[in-house]
Image 1 (cartoon, rainbow, N blue to C red):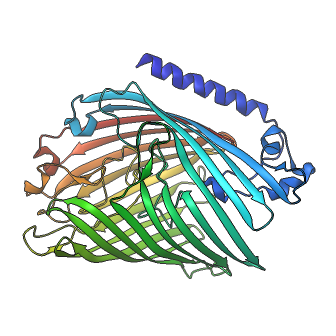
Image 2: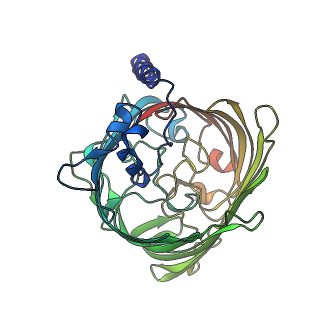
Image 3: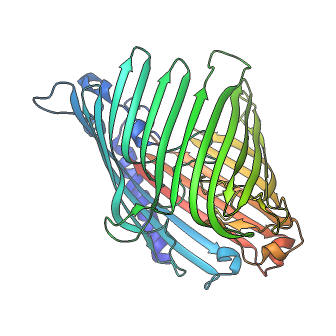
Length: 465
């Protein structure tokens, strides 16, 4: 354990040295969560640059007017310490280890219409006693690699993109790039997007990847196909009218596992999201219904989720009081011909907390929390999440979306609660530091399978350029 903490602190020190090198120049825009969404054409003007970090963002190509190459990357170290690993049901109940992520990308623009984006990744897990999960270690592989064609017409743009790519929609409840685990989620996909006039619509057909630990050996998961339409109507000028998302998503999955059994799954999701920040208030409501086939049975599942908050903008520390609530359907009769368990598709794994133990299926939760801004770029958050099963006849589901053995036999409803403490410091444009502590208190459902309380500690430093 000691050498892993020393390695973490060494990376932290390197990060602070890099921070000091930037100087007092005005900071460029923040990096995007999806790196291919960044644009640096303005840096063609040398007067807008502030050092080497900007020079590599616009590298003019000789003999090719309006063509440039942009380089970037990320180096992230994440230390995790768990007491009660996998609820104390794993081979080693206590574990601590270091997760390392290194990403490098190149973004080639040939005029205003064509671009090619390539991102390579190396991911390692050091010192883990338990078996490494597929999202923790992948020695070297293509994280993203796609070609893109754009047709800009005034304020409207049509984009077609083909190749390996990350995707994220809405609040990431159903489709996320999965940033918290060591390896982000990519799809081999074809995607068409239209943007203009406060309206965006995306259509895609994709295959998620089957991750392997070797070199250049990731491949599309032949057992899954994913497609959909996702639209966003934004109303920045309206004071009270909500921004709205509407979507239709489809999933084919072979040998899907539920408490009801194992069968091929063909599922459709229809959903809507209403969201806005208006003055001190903000809200985010989402509703979805699912239908389809599970083997010879039908599917009928649903979810309703909310995240509402109020921030005292002019008070010291700008405190924000928030409340998250979810109702996510589960199956009430494993012997009938209808599966009612909701499938969260491809969500962010830190859906409820950084320990990423709980999957949003067959669940109800109430999560009050408070956050403050403790300084420039520093945010602290404290919350307590209370969890119940929606149906006592369905299992409690854990990552990677599997029923926890034996929980479908429990007749208790209360799963437990999670006390969460999070801290984040955006030191500057390049460096971010994060801390998280989560204690999971087991309830009757988990105690019925002899699960233990879980203590989770996370320290993370990341450097992006």
